[in-house]
Image (cartoon, rainbow, N blue to C red; front, side, top):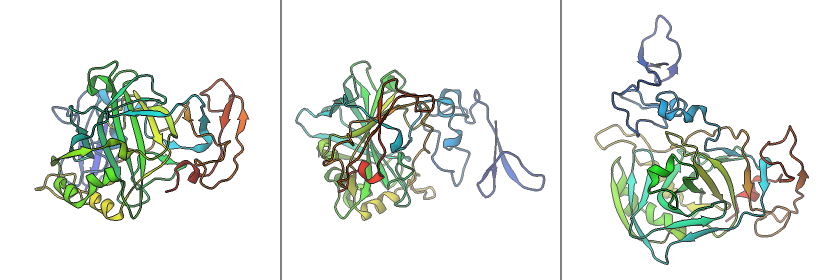
Length: 357
């Protein structure tokens, strides 16, 4: 595979005779770098320096990452509400903190704002679509350079300013996250869209207030936080959307159960601005904003998107208070292809899914 980068930074498969290009050669079995590093990838083109693969190349530059290109259950996705299936057997998600607050270290990884809890106070989730207990490994923030983008998942084609992802590993079957990430039923990710408001979610406020966020301006910066209550991060709802997918960074293992909560969390405009001022680089390198740290959406293909939101009933899940008429139809060749029983095919407006403040 040949990568050609023009002086303007654009990628091109061919080079015309009269132009000047830098040429990069890569095969799936021979990485560009002599020693492939797990962090050797990017969301955006690097302004200066050697080639680092952006999402469209993740699955091409190394054989261990080929699922990023050829996988059939990749994440994130665009959640088209016409494809959603009401599943009455989806129970509420259970959060277990042991009744204690936790501490954690907040990092600027160069790609995300990452909060990793200490090992002394364990946080677990179970129930819902999960058949095992999953331990919290990391809280990761995705956010955009503009208010109309920044979430990895989309809702009927629309993005949100950001997305919080609580990443857990299956502690019943596996010893740690690394083992679980490449194993069946290994990962559970609780995802919550971020919206803007005059007031901030109390948990995110601890992470994004000025005294804290300015401690991680540059890559590799870290700051310890104590007395965190992870329950404060969860919106007040038992409703969610779930599907089977992948982790959204290389190697894109297809081992993740995604649970998207049916209400957003809120941050202030100033806090979002502070996130956009975080640099992907060390302080001695050129500033490159961490914003737009999202992988493009991937094809749904034959997967189900299930929900415990019953749109046949009016109530708090339907803030516009309109009666909804679900359509029941069997699975035919022209259907979604993911269930063999009668399904509740939901058609509704987007503001029903992500609850209003």
